[in-house]
Each structure stands twice: as C-alpha cells, then as structure tokens.
Amino acid sequence: MQAIRPSIYTEAVIPAPHAASCTDSIDWYEFLERPRLPSPTLKSLEHLRDTSILVTGAGGSIGSALSLQLARLGPRHLALLDISEQALYRLQSAFAEARLPAQPRLILANISDASHLDEIFETHRPEVIFHAAAYKHVPLLEEHPFEAIANNALGALTLAECVKRRNIARLVLVSTDKAVTPISILGASKRIAERITLVHEGVVLRLANVLGSEGSVSETFLRQIAAGGPVTITDPMAERYFLTCEEAVDLLLASASAKAGSILVPNLDRQYKISSLAEFIIRTGSSEASPPITFTGLRPGDKIREALWSTEERPLPTVVHGHFEMEWQESGNTLLRYELMQLKDAVRERDLPRALEIVLQLVPSYIPSATVRTLQRKALGALQS
Image (spheres, rainbow, N blue to C red):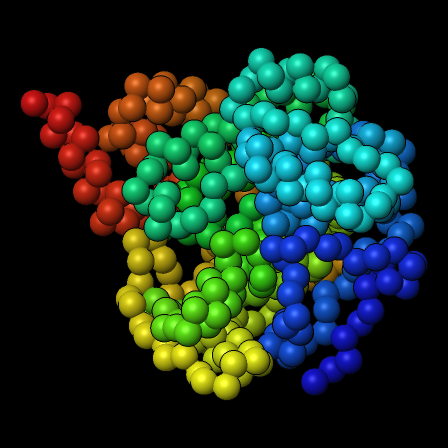
C-alpha cells in the first residue's frame, strides 16, 4: 500500500475536520488501498478568509465537517443553516467542544422558504454558498417523490434565484453520482438541481459515497455489527465509488475557486464491491464472532454500479486538488425556467403524473422505478375517478 499523503491541514498545524458521524476508529484508507486525495493548499484557500460564507445543510455529516474546517480557516463571517433543530444543536455543541475563536451564526430555516432566504441574505450577505442541504435516502424517497422534488430540486431553485437577485455570490452545489443517468427520484431531483446551478453560473461537485457519514452504508454496517448482525447487503455484485469525509471537505473547499458553470468529480479510479466493504469492517472490528452476511436484493432506485459522469460528458485531462472538471454541453435551457415553474405548480397541486412527466422532460435519461410508477398509476386512477 502506498503511503498516505498528509493533509495540508496537519502540515499547517490546523486540526483535521471532526464530526462524530464522519469519523471513527477505522482507517478507511486501508480499505481504499490508495493515498488520500490531494488537499488544496492554504494559498489556494486564502480567498475564503476575507469572505462571508453560508453553508446550507450545515448540520449533516459533510455540512458539519465542512463548517468546522471553514471556521478554522477564519472567514470574515460564517452562517450555518439547517432545517433540523437537533442537527443545529449538535453542531453548536461541536463548535463549543472545538473551542474555535470565531463562533458562527446558526440559522434554523428551510431553503424552500423564499421570504426567509431573502431575510438571511440581507442580514448575512454571503459571497460563497455551499449548498449541502438535501434529502438523500434512495428507498425512502422512492415512496415520497414530492418531497424529493420539492426539497432537492425546487429548494435549489429557490436558493439559486436568491443568489441571482443579488449577483454577488458563488454557489457550490453538493451533488451525487446518483444524478448520472438516474433510476431513482433522488438522482433525478439532484440532476435537476445540477441544471439549475449550472444555468445560474454556479459550480457542481458530484461526490461519491462518503465512508462513515451519517446514513451511509458503512455506518449501517457498523450498527449491524454492533448488534451482532446480520449484515445486510443488497446484491453481491453491487459496487460503489467511495471517499472519506476529509476528502469530501477538501474537494468542497477547492471547488469554491472553480470557474463558473463547472461540473467537478473526484479523481477516483475504481469502484469497490459493497460486500468487500462489509467484510473489511467485520475483519477490523473488535468482536471475535463474525456476524452473518445476508443479501436482500436491490431496493427501488438502487443501481448495481454508479457512474461519475454520463456519456454526454467528458473529463478534462488535468486533475486539480483531487478532482476532474467535466466538459459538457447543456441543451434546452430556454425552456428550463418554464418547465421548473410547471414542476412547482404540479408539486403544489400534488399532481404526481404531471410532476413525473416534467421530471422526465428535465432529465430524459431518468428511468423511474416500479415503486414510483405504481404511485403514478394510483395517482392517475384517483384523478380519473
């Protein structure tokens, strides 16, 4: 195994990001069998120091780790927004334990509330916005497509329009590899959010599965192992791209200086079988007894393998701070705003057949699952009765 490259933060005597849901005693690089992705240099992050920054979804695993690292960089102003009171309380406690000299402003808010967002922008005047707020659990959202669309897609629209009205801020969207040729409503809603961000000259960063983060498959395995098993895996052939929480934070920090309208993806050269991850966690655990592994079958919206870019995109050859920039062509932007307004109306009216019709116009590569199709048929039957 290659030696792990030290973080720029340890080199600069700045503590590495800490968030309870993102770290534990497991050396994830031992599983990944690769060095850590390159960190951005402190010089490349200087522009964040004299800046007002807003982080949405700040109470989540990545959001909280990003927020703590931003605070260590010492921006002029740091505002942290989340819809969850409990998540903000945990984040407040994490800042108190870290004993950082500068304390952020915590904001309890919903990104879909345009009036509240206007107030927040007027008060905090953010110049860089990291948009990490999103629903992310695939099977759960397959049962709740309206919520996926409203929060992930239309929430991104509300935020992007607020940014545009002021014309002073750089918007960075935390996206996912599930947005590439999606078969889940999560992926489709995030692909719409990508399109919205790009047309508003923001930056899209697609992350892979983050090891140890809250709600991740690795966290599920750890919980199942602690309970004595069984460890449940969807399919023996299922594979995913993985990166660590500290790598995700580094990629986000670096993405703030990318050019407007960029799609960025991590420089990850391989996917790993989910079963191999489960076996690694079991093998490195302290329990003498190995819990059984059971295969449950792919869930609605699950893929066997993910992709970091589509056939319409091409990675440019230069790797900067651990990520590629994608070459891409967008079409249909003249209709984008009209379609989004139609989508907003369909969600407000709870018209699922119409909403899905518009989602398919916005994301032609989307293949709805049987679960979503069943909900669509039921809704159509109810409308016709």
